[in-house]
Image (cartoon, rainbow, N blue to C red):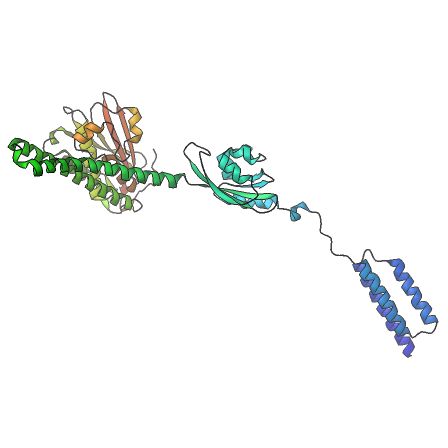
Length: 424
């Protein structure tokens, strides 16, 4: 009975071993297995203990399995063994910056922003052809990451930061960051400081010169000249004061430009009074008003007054001295009101119109300074209009005059109809 149980156990073990082997080993040596089984049968027939026979056969078969086993094969799948192009394309398209992936120096993938910037044809091009910039080419043809600043990549004055990140011996990712705006802001700041310094230095030099003359040669200066010197000093000091006031006003308006006014403001009486204040008693008779109805906007009262005074003063100062200046309020499209200030002067040449709202820009510097202008009036007007979510246009014809039109969103029954992008 014991021998039968041992034989049954040995046959069960062999059966399980065969089944496991058949299911897991495709390259198993069946000839070796047959030889092991035959040896086992011979040993049992020779009277060897079946348990010992089973151990010998199991060791034999186990050695055959170890010999036949091999490490798992890595499938030669380009999608898993190399960078997945589809996944990379989808990832790069998520970025709002121009991104590209190169393969051995050629642009293999470019997202929508990169194609829009450099053109659809860049995919498949060599980076040296796509960029054509010495600094960029030096970086992108190296096998190291890094960044560089290039100018004129797309337009003559634009500035881009190009960064490269190497991700394998074949692939690299290129990122483009537009730094033109930062450069423009920095350049505008430098220009502003330089212009402001120049505008302040001119009257200050005049004041110092006349004061030095009065201090050093006061007894030799005639009473008439002394009076003239004093008048000049006072005029230049007032000019400096006006310039400083305008600079401070412009700074305050710029600080508030992202905070639109919330209070309702009736324009008609405010515009009329501000226009008269801007004209002064000596020029008030030259004003003409054309206001169709009452208009209410969301506005800052002081800033709207300043806007009207600046426009009216400019129209009276630079327009014809014998013609009237018209201030009008009228209905405009898209729930807006249009304010128009027009003169009948000599007009402004078309080449100057795009630059009139720049700080310290003057079409006739000598005439502007002689009339007491600071060169900041229209720059202040522009920023006030932007804060009120309005739109300004300037039209002028030589010999006919100049027309400045400003549109503001209307205020309606306690709910302001504020349009962030009024139609031009």
